[in-house]
Length: 115
Length: 114
Image (cartoon, rainbow over all chains, first blue to last red; front, side, top):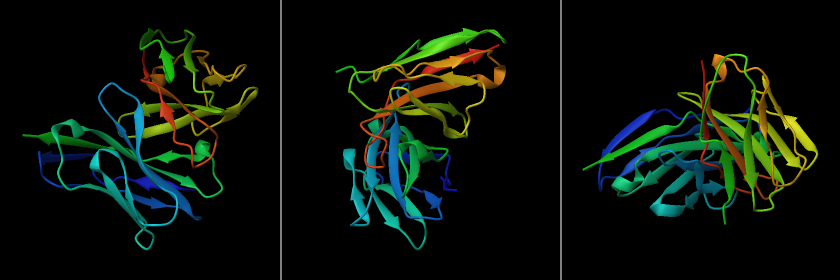
């Protein structure tokens, strides 16, 4: 069975500082990886996804993530955060044979950006 | 373009009551699903549907029923509400049930069972 671990439940950071949100996964087969963002009182929306090819994936709002197969990680990064990036971020994994029905989410990381 | 619409936004139920959470999408998506979101537990899949007339169970289906009579609608029924079902419920849809189709989420229904 696949699983996702987000090691940090909360990450406080000052505006314009860099940030990294960590995600590790486990799966017995090849996987597809996603980051979703949830702004307050809203549903989730897709930030970026890794399906194949280049291990560095760029998403919306200046975020990027790097797939590392040997470390089974898919950490999310942004070089300079803005107040508007304050949100909860979810890492998710879908298995190779899978459908969206097999999308497994992590427990989320709350990013709090302050001045 | 409305996307995925969930109603109601908030609901309070007494233990044992029944209710239906509504979900509708106007994107002609084949795949629809229901998740519940609880603090510290992320999102967990309750039920999903890959097309009209086809439904299947997810990770936490007990206490919930679904049906899919049309492509657009995917209601979630609580037959006899329990306090353990207090949660935020999200409906999500995608073009097809593959890894390559991102999920589109509604804004959620916050349910409290007393």
